[in-house]
Length: 160
Image (cartoon, rainbow, N blue to C red; front, side, top):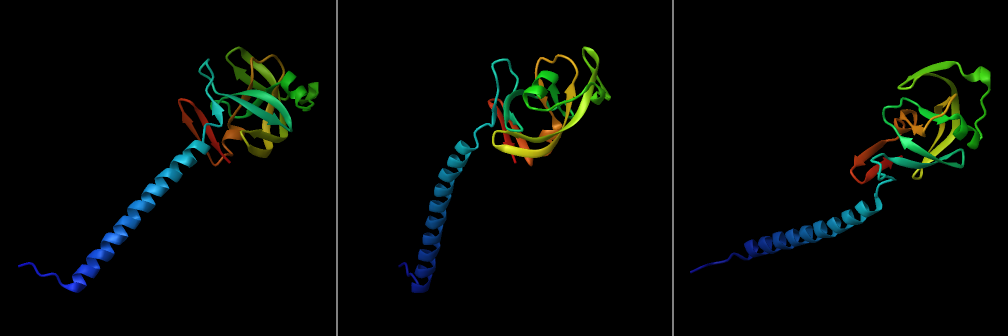
């Protein structure tokens, strides 16, 4: 004969109710996690050429930039700098950069603001290159000030 103590039955029922409540909460949170993952879509998508191209706003002006973690500093072509309202004179080209194409003169500047995918930073260190560049570079003087960024095959996610 099986005998059940009423107190044991109450404890068992409470434990079962708690377990079911936890399971329901976990299921609900799992759904919320999926919603968050959908919101955290890549900030910068990978292009067909395999590179990450960012649609940036330099002091409120649009500019397409190549994301380059190997570039220490945001680097603008002279033409892109002019489009962004960054003016430099011949006397401002005080640095020499060693590039794959050889040495090139550059002018250090501070960009008032640089925004990519909704993450806006102010007073961003940059260089303006005196010469042609295939693309301006979104370098570590911007990327290094983010709280983080994550690279996945489909793109990069920036965290402000």
